[in-house]
Length: 273
Length: 272
Image 1 (spheres, each protein chain N blue to C red):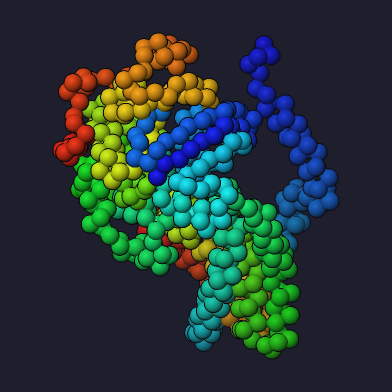
Image 2 (cartoon, one colour; image 1 turned 90 degrees about the horizontal axis):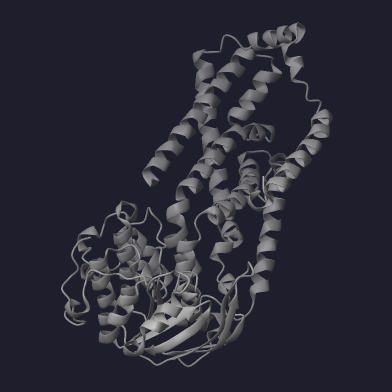
């Protein structure tokens, strides 16, 4: 091959691939990644016994009533937590979005200020989501006592950090030209966001928010830990009493909720398409 | 709104030198066309005039002030008075035509009005009136991704017409239209500029369109101004030099100069 037509990106690509492999191998060793162990006869047997303990699922009417109440509680807490998270995430996510920066068009001055504010917002988001929700919950239990308030607050803060980061990234990766054009015609940032960015990004934003709501439903296991009730607490009790049937019913409820979240997300995406 | 460029030069971030030593003086109400081969720097020049690209060298004066010495608030106010029609219409595909056109006034509306207009369009009559001039009145509530390239380009044009800017800039505003429609659209731009007494600068790929419709024609070559003359004084030799690299003059054709429509009293455009 003549040197003129050789892809100049080919060599760096090969280099990065090799570097990734060289890094990955010791990490897999460190994580004791041995998939073969899953299929050894003794291990399969042990897993089979564990799973068999969950069958049949518990269907006694009084347990189902308890399960229903816990489900509603869990949904309420997840929804409240996500609402709080969205309130935190929207302003922080917008700050992160460089395509909304008027300074980047070339202002008279002050470009460095925007960079500083963005770095600060990035730092705040990292702290919010870097501390696991369990730790936040334990902190808030000391203020609000055992109960839903601590759990909701902990969820809101951690998920606010995650949502804010991803909102910012979704907005940044959508087509920046419409919003840039509006800013160039003297529009304000928020108006430019609504007219130039949201039409393209709304679907991604909604589907990620609904996905996080689904995660919040699952995270109610943490809520159980701080005594907030809900499915988490029920699960905790059932596991402690080694009642596999009850645990199976709870897991089935989680599955139904996840499917429902999926359907909701699909519906909203179709509405926004 | 008139403007002055003095020794303007600009090097893009990738090291490409797009403009060098550009001097230009345009009085309020003047109409001029930028012509030149593709890659000559017409778009960059327009964006410098629109105060959206800051030149690396030289000085830009818009109206009476230097945009790059203004406070951010004043610069925003200045930008709201400049309308630039982009070559590829920067409109989100899912947006409705009415919203895309009304977005022209975002620089003038207060935030609450802009947001309320997303729920219930604030001025559908105004948007429809501009669309009607471009024969798109019946597409008011259509989604932009249902439009053809030429229709979308006219929606972008309607947005800038609705903005009612004091400086009307257009970057190849007819590149996706057929020759007859191009003719009518360029005439419409000129008619708007004359009627409102605003300055019009349009870059055009078709030389004959530029010569037919604009009193002043500026030839841009390799990021510099090759000639800046009244349309009547542009000679064949100059054009040949301007397009030396392309090996031929790009023309819109179809409409002979003597049957070109008059600038005033245009009939509405026919559908493309």
